[in-house]
Amino acid sequence: MCKIKGNSNIILRITILVIIIVLLFISCFKENNNMQDINKEEAITIAENALIVVFGSWHIERYKPFIAYLENGIWYVEGTLYSKPGEVVRGGVPYVEIRKEDGIVLNIYHDK
Image (tube, rainbow, N blue to C red; front, side, top):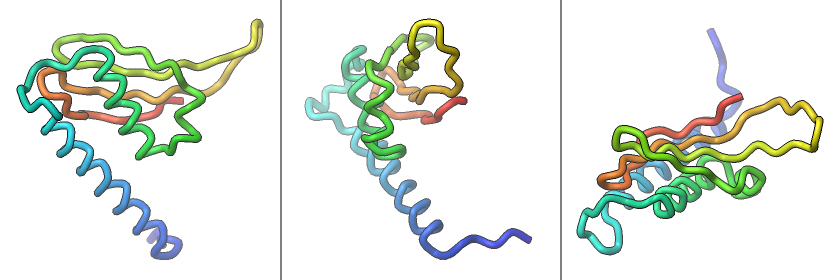
């Protein structure tokens, strides 16, 4: 049986979950409320805000600029991994999937 180290871990997970749910709710009701499809710049803004909530702004800043591409009605927003010339870099970048029609965040993850 696996023990959880203190209540702070549970509280942190619940807090992150609540913040993500709030972001999803807010993205449903954009300022203009006309339910137009979101564009590339809006997708990147939504993704950056969601990533800051999940990973923190200090972590996200190093993956800018974010790149967005549209495929099958979903905006895929990903960070940029930097390296010095000739340097082999290990690690990954954050990704966010956003529905084009209403700006709902569908998925947030960080690959390695």
